[in-house]
Length: 203
Image (tube, rainbow, N blue to C red):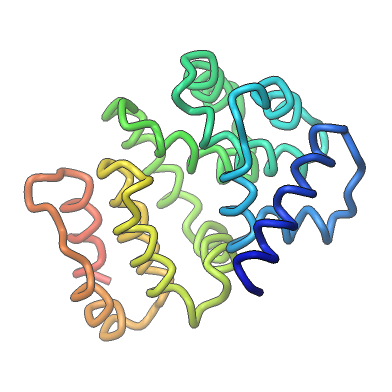
């Protein structure tokens, strides 16, 4: 799909979200997937914060996902930073935590303790997590290119990069994982990146 088309769709969809329109599960699935989700995020403005929080609070898990996917553009607001951490601490639900971890990791000031909690969440739920990550990447054929694009995307903090390295483990084949790793310039001084690297080397 062309960029202009995606921008047009994203603008229309977000206006519908603001107006509390209803969406089918299949539509929400597309809205929560790459690449449309990235275009939706670009349309978000600070005044959308209440709409986003209401989505996150929704009993409908797909609307909750949408809220968590859209929250990136308002992460600079202290209200949102605190709310997301509180939400993480108050839920044990795998599905909600899966979507919640991404905006949490977009906070460059996220504590080392929280990074380790998220790491443990991923490794403890690896079989489920790798399927969700692969789906979000657009399928197994896109795992390396998706992870590489996100790893080098300057919109995301350096502290988040470890999760995209860990995502390479979903490739499965040890040789292919090691070939993929050659595309990533790792930080030898970053504890989380080195921790993930040791896991991949032992895969």
